[in-house]
Image 1 (tube, rainbow, N blue to C red):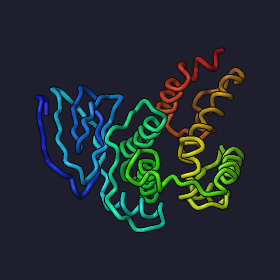
Image 2 (cartoon, rainbow, N blue to C red):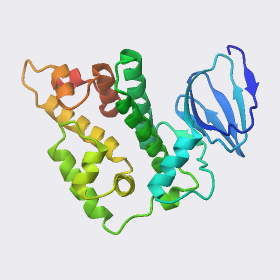
Image 3 (spheres, one colour):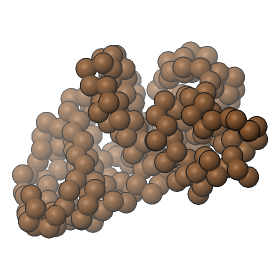
Image 4 (cartoon, one colour):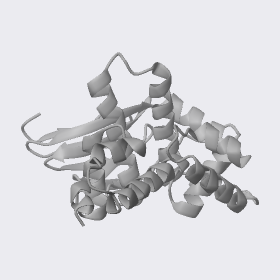
Length: 261
């Protein structure tokens, strides 16, 4: 809006909204909680909580809108039962946390492909990315179903170990959550819950973490003539710029600097 502005829409009702300032700051009041939104603190606005937005001057924001029906359907599917109340999230989402960084990475990947490949990306891929975002939010962002969602099955530890072994054995292949769950003899729901409890990551976030570690190990031991692009692509990173940015954030140096050690 340019100038400072206050917006009080009340309850959103039909969709959940994620907001994070790209420039400037905002005070976002969700129910009884006030979120000082900034580049490092996003806000999750649940559909059934009253909302007031106080945007500062020149505040530019990234907004992600998710239909309420899809969130509730996903939550019901993970629980294996009908919901007895609307899903309501804790409004604060720290983007410096492991959960927040993984969430940003997922959104960034989706935006990247939509921006560069609009009309080309298969609808099935887009749907899978959307489902992954919703599941990540339900399992990693505190909400009124968190305790039930994260109840640990008795055999969870073994399933996590089997899944991790499968991931490492197929790290350079096109892994899907369904493949990993099948290999571990687990449902997607129970495996995701077990990974969240054991690693504080979803299975696919764990895959990305391990691929990054493998790429770094190869870069540190690389022979002359090896290209960063080849290493990134070999370990499943299809966008070189995002790989380099994520690499520097994690390790404090660029891939080229690692190769020169």
